[in-house]
Each structure stands twice: as structure tokens, then as C-alpha cells.
Length: 606
Image 1 (tube, rainbow, N blue to C red):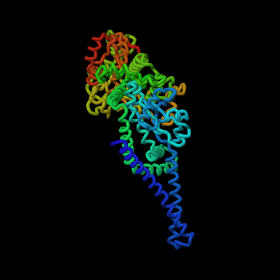
Image 2 (image 1 turned 30 degrees about the vertical axis):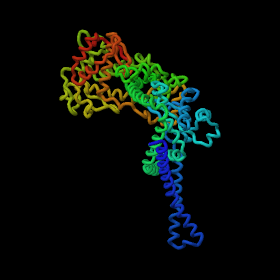
Image 3 (image 1 turned 180 degrees about the vertical axis):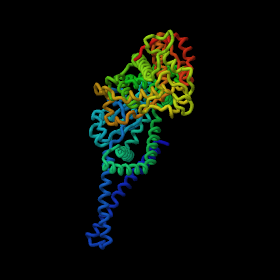
Image 4 (image 1 turned 135 degrees about the vertical axis):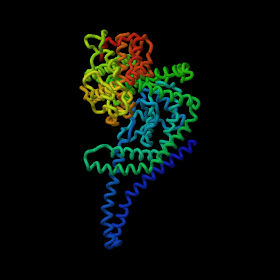
């Protein structure tokens, strides 16, 4: 599909959407038109008689009601705020070279330049219309700087959409690669400037925003009933124009892609490979590295810089990037920013909000952490806190300290206490839905309390399939840990974090609903089995650090890791699972002995 063919398809579909809008308006005006005809007939001594009089009495109030309803629906659609993606705005003063590159691309493509540039903490790029009054007009100087026209020109022409760029692209890609990736995106400003396409998009966005308004929870029965009607009409219109709107966007994309063929075509193939690589590294960095920090109230302040380290490691391990060394010699795209560090920090904070639901700014319970501080401030602290929670739960269960001549007389927390409890020789694997702690499952604990306490959101060993196939002590301890963690998360924070100072991310987030955070949760809640494995691993790592000189470390692809003599340990997880599932501590004890880790020695808890 060529440029003209794609543009013609988009315009034809846009006209189809506008015809649906016109038909809806005609339906709303039809009763009023009939009522006017009946009233005019009565005024001219025509259409007289009881039948016409009855028709006038019925249709006139109906026409008024329909007009009022149509006016109300139109008002809601017009005033409803369309969804706006949370982004970090980038002014031209903060990135003059980036703006210059975007303008040059627009000139080569013979399309209007974007009205502004913003960054999103994700591996994607798009154009976003922010001309709705609720979004606020872009600054006048940005109009002049980007579009290259004066104020009079902006009164005559619609404002171009905002170019949203994935922040990982700026740090991982070279300047030429970023230019090739952005070419088809910027080319989309051409079709977007067509009046019919712009009007059709405004109509669809307005309907979508009206549905969101109608779906918001409300207590007043009158407003709830009125907005229910508005939502029904908006959904009906959306369904009517859904196919045409989708085909319109496909036509716009096809026209933009065809127009961009003339710009850096050969480089675009290489750049698309880097897009896939950036997505893989970004996903690993968020789920393995950033998420553990977010869960404990810390947010890495240089996520985009971490992408480069993660992708470098991924390329080294899997050899995914050919010619990687020569690529690093080219100019990185982040050089197009005047202060990459501050932009990275704002994007990192926004990522924490979108993917985890953190506050809008730093505070006592939500502070940034640098990569150099990550092992001590996140990894070590996370392990200590998990180990402390594990022993706190064992205390509530009445589990006795470890026995034996090497056990500390003070009753200090040790790894042996956990191993002895989970490796109770009298235990058996739980099966099906047998309750943990029942006689069929063997003794659940070595203390008097064998009934897991429930808390909101905690799993029940009676029906949690995740805990079937584990020993009774493991299932009971897992349920207790889950309940304890649920209580901690449900407890109100002693001090609500408040932003220390305004940030670009918090300013940009003013127009989206914080109640929906996180907008894109990375992972579902951890299961009880996973929680037990995490806590047992943390206890082993604490014992290794306190008795064998091990240190916490950061693996760019796998997150927190234990370093012994500077080498990463990668074979701990199977031993932990064997203990949880089979109650067999022998593989783990052998592993501890080989590395010189003393399970009977006390450990320092968080």
C-alpha cells in the first residue's frame, strides 16, 4: 500500500466515522424537526383535528427531552478528558540536538514537526494528540521552536501531536538507529494533520472519555442513572465506528511507513533488531532488578543507564548483538540530551509509579538508590528483613531454637533452626487438599501452634493448590509467612511519603488517575510457595554473609545475587526447593558445608 493509497483509505474511513456522528445528530434532531412541522401546521391553520393535536402534545415534550438528552451527552463527550499517557516532558532547552534531529526528519519527510517531545519508561514510541483543553495548551515558545512558525500560523493550523519516545531507546540506541526508528513515527504527523482524520479521532477519543466518565463509581443515584444513559449511548456509538476507526489507523500507519521508506531504510533493519534487544533487557531489568527494590521502598534512580549494563551482559552471554564493540564506538542517543542524568531519574521515578504504584516523589519511605549502593542498600537489607520475618513467624508458631551442642545458648536466630523445622523426619508430603497440620500430613510444627493464622489476601492451605506437593511444615510456614506479609502491607504507613520537590514526572502525571496505580503491574502477587522459597533463600544468604564472608551482589539480568569469593552462586534454588517439597535438607546442608557456611552460627537480622 503506497502513501496515497494509505492516505485515501484513512480519509475514507474517517469520513465513515464522521457519517456515524452525523447520523447520531440527525436522530437526536428528528423529533424536534417533526414537532416543528406539527406546530407550524397548527399556526397556519393546517394539520388540525384531534389526531394532530394529540401528536403535537406527545411529540413536543418528547422532542424537548431528546434535545436536552442529546445536549447533555454532547456536553459530557466534549468536556470529558481523553486519556493521556503518563510521560516525562522534554523541553527544547533540555534537548536541543534531539529537537533538531526531529525537525530535520520532519523536513525530509515533508510532514509537520511534532509540537513537543516526551519520554515514556517503556520500549515504544508513538504520536499522541494533546490538544484537548483539559490537557492544557503547549507553551507558546514550544510552538515556535518545534513547528518553526509564528503565532498567526498556529491560529490557522491545528497543533501537531506530541512525539513520545521510549526512554530505553535513548540510552541503548545510537543516534542513527534512533533516527531510523523514529522516521515512520514522525511520518504519521502528515495524515494526522488532515481535517477529516483529526475530527474523526477527536470524536472517537471523546466517546472513549465519556465511557470512562460514566464508568466512574458514584454514590448519588440521580447522577449514576444519568451517566449510565450517557455511557450506554457512548458505547453504542463506539461499537458502530470501531471497525472504521481501526481501519483508519491502519491506513495512517501504512501511509506513514511508506513515506518513511526513503529515510535510512538500510539502517532501519538493524535498528529494529536493537528494539527487540532493548525490550528484552528492559523487561529483565524491571522484573529482576527494579521490582525487589520497589517492594522495599527504594527506587533505582538510573534505570535507563541500567538497561545498557543489562543489555551488555545479555549480549556477552548470548551473543545477541553482532558487532557490539564497534556499535559502542558510535554516539549514543542519550547524548542528544543536555542532562541525561536528571532525565533518567525522572523516567525512573515514573516507571516505579506505572509498574509498581509508588508515590510521585521521594520521601522517607520512598527514596532513590544508586546502582553502586544497590547491593548494600537493597540486596543486604532485603535478605535481612526477610530473614527477620521468617524467624518472627517461627516465634509465633512456637518453634523451638535449634538443638545440639553447637547451637547458641542465647537462642539467637540461626539457619539450623529453620532447617531442623522444615526437615522434621516425621513429616510427609501434603497431598490434594489435605490441610497442613492434619494427622494425615504428619506434625506441622515442633511447637504447640499448628493452625495457620489467616489475614486478608493470605492463601488457605486447605484449598491452595500451590502448596499441595509440599511437606506439612512447609505448607504451614508458607501460609503463616503469607499472612504476616499481608498484615504488613495492609498496615497504614506511619508517615505518608510526600514529594520533597516538584519533578517533571509528577507534573506530567497530574492528568491521570493515581487511584488506578499501578497501571501496568509487572507480576501477579507472589504465591505462598514462592514467598517461602524467597525467605529461606534470604536466610541462607544471611548465614553465608555472616559466617563465610560472602557479600551481596547485583546481577544485571537476575537481580540480587550472593557472591562468594567474588563469584556468583547459581545453584542454590534447587536445594531450597528440595527442602520445601520433600523435607530433605541433605542437598542444602552439603552445599553449605562445601562453601564453609555455618548454619548453627547466629545471624544478624534486619
